[in-house]
Image 1 (tube, rainbow, N blue to C red):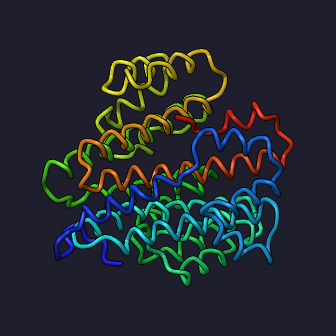
Image 2: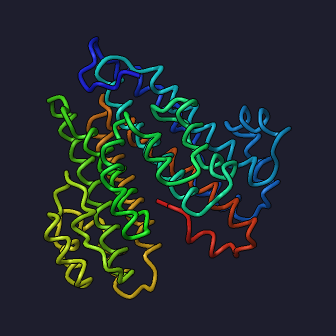
Length: 352
């Protein structure tokens, strides 16, 4: 797909926004998540069959069952809806959506890296792939066939991620951690996302959202590094483009979690994150805070979509809402299969 931000031709935001609004109307709500938490994987699959996942459940039901059926159906449905967005959009709007959907190329690369690193069966890795980005089936299959981390790096040669992961491979060898490679993937994604954005008030707000997304990614990474105690330079894994702090400031703040939390509290995000920051100061786990970050980012995207309904902002809000639905249903199904309590599963969900 031609994902240039300045693709020729006129955009059609009225039509795309109308289609997105219709799709938002069939997303699962919080009451439905409460119902699913009390169901077995087989019951969840039957519930999905009576929803807008019917097409995927019916197509896959003869080959898969239980959690496998749910996960394949979720990912196929996600890809179907996001590819449909590209089918609706034209001109500049098409280019902006296509560029944002490359996040699934990044997701798939990191999923394959983790699978190879942990020697996971390729079929299990494929279950987690989301075919909604720019990579075609041939390239994804090449990635799945890779038997070493170096093989994955080789397959990515010539893609927008190639130079970054090649440069990070030496750090991977030295540290035996995927952090350098995963961060190189994220950096490449956000660099192309922010590069050559067109002008205009609506796109300026979209840039603000992307900057917030980068800030939240850096905050999450900084806190993970701070809690891990690993001897890794945080600044080396900093993603440029945000507005919260610089690479050097991040390096300093990671060494003092209290100062890092204070910096976030005093930032433009402090009001939105006040409650989760209070919990983070006394929590043993980052999970709740990371869920709160996701919820805040989703709420922020929805606010921007309301301010500029005829722009990419409501489209991005829908993409995040659909991702949230898929992530929540997957977490419930996996939790039920693992025998987790309802309370434990609910803590894994992103609830607004």
